[in-house]
Image (cartoon, rainbow, N blue to C red; front, side):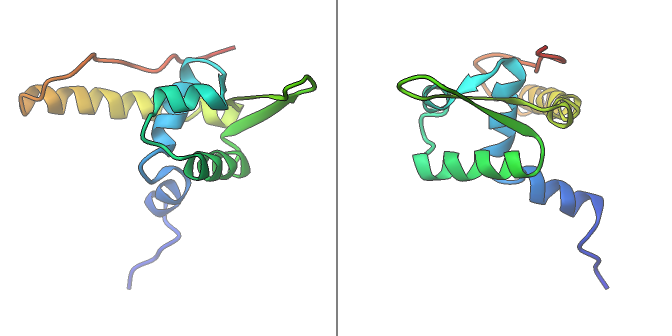
Length: 118
């Protein structure tokens, strides 16, 4: 019998999908405004970005700060819990870089996350 409340299932429920790890990666670089995400991830729709950010905020990985100015400014950053995910992102980046070498896949760059943005 398969148990579904295991570490890997919890992990996939929190950060699985096409965009969440990429969102967390960009937030590991710096706090980011909504508009910047569209520039960084041109294929993402407004609906999907909003949903993904809300889920990451609900799950405690992302902090949303609204500045009281006109027009309103909203900025996203990693929480302490979100920062604890950065080593996982770096492991994923390292594995992806090594995979690209083994499979002879062209890459734009070999990148890693910053360990602390504060």
